[in-house]
Amino acid sequence: MPKPRALVIGGSVGGLFAAHLLRLAGWDIAVFERARGDLGDRGTGIGTRAELFAVMRRIGIAVDLASIGVNVQGRTGLGADGTVVHELSMPAVNSAWSRVWRPLRAALPGGSFHGGMTLTRIEHDADGVTAHFADGTSVEGELLVAADGLHSIVCMQLWPGAGPQYAGYVAWRGVVEQGAVAPELQELLFDRMVFGCPAGELFLSLPMPGPDDGPLRGNRRCHFVWFRPVAEEALPSLCTDASGRAHGISIPPPLIRPELIAALRRDADALLAPQLAASVKATGQTILQPIFDVESPAIACGRVALLGDAAFVARPHVATGVMKAGMDAACLADSLAATKNLPSGLAAYDAERRPYGRWLVERGRHIGATAMARDLPFQQRIETLMREYGAAGVVRDQPIAARLSG
Image 1 (cartoon, rainbow, N blue to C red):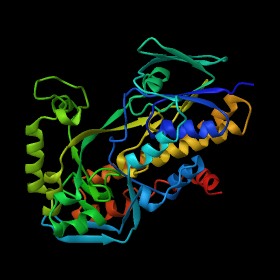
Image 2 (spheres, one colour; image 1 turned 90 degrees about the vertical axis):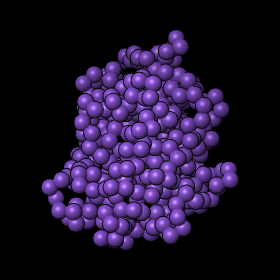
Image 3 (cartoon, rainbow, N blue to C red; image 1 turned 30 degrees about the vertical axis):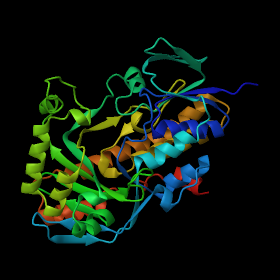
Image 4 (tube, rainbow, N blue to C red; image 1 turned 180 degrees about the vertical axis):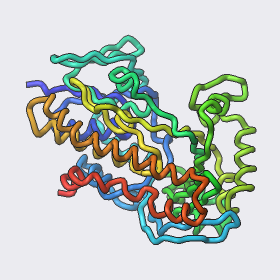
């Protein structure tokens, strides 16, 4: 008897988690990714937890500290003059997005991953689901998993009013190589999570593993994130390149106008601790990321399941995006395996994961409000953020966590 077929839209980590776990549960899987080529060079640093490692081990991917990340000794808060104003002992393991994506991609069976496939629309009824792509291809299956991210085509088709909602600020990001900063700064920037809190803004520096190949293999990196308020009407200007071409509300990093990078570096000197300003000036490629919230009214509809950022996008302050995608995928596979009835399985998935997604979005908004506040005393704000940032992402996630550990 042929296996039921699952069409996975999106080849980032969420889609790959879903593909592996559904395959283990007896599904034939096919993954369709819009981009062409290797995605392994995308993404920056990520936080990790035991639940993420448990999902990877369940798939059959061995993980240890040497392969997945680096130890972070604790958290340090700096004043604008560079003095230490607060410290917390919160050991952690930080990784890089590529350290999760690459082994997931390598472990997929040959022929199951299809790049350069841009979804245009879906059709689904009681008998099956069909995905239609920009090249004219149509593919049929029994289940469609939408893991197509923040601007999910599937989510927007199912619920046109559930698109991304701008949070009122952007993140400027960059990755700094270990040899690009002075030796006296390396212990701070490459061993600890460092916070800076200019009025109404938040700066973070987070250690992450270096490249897993090439001449810099084994070196550490640090990843900085600088959250800064930007009015929504100003986003198109930020996302216009030097030739005058407007890119909407996002822009490829190489096309960011040089004068914007120069202004960011001047602001770093004026507003940040010298140690943090040094990392802004040492990065080779600056990235602009407008911050959005996404709340889907449901994460299952007919024969369609939404997963990861296609279902909910919480602000980066919760630091759980990759882990949440893995746990969504595990819950989906478990819910479908527990019943022979697809609608019942999808309803169980929705009932378990949707409340957590909604809570996570609210959690991100709460931390974001503190991060961008101008009316809180500096010491109160930095101590609160150092304690709460990314620290509660799994508190409400105990059912699936218990199954993974068991």
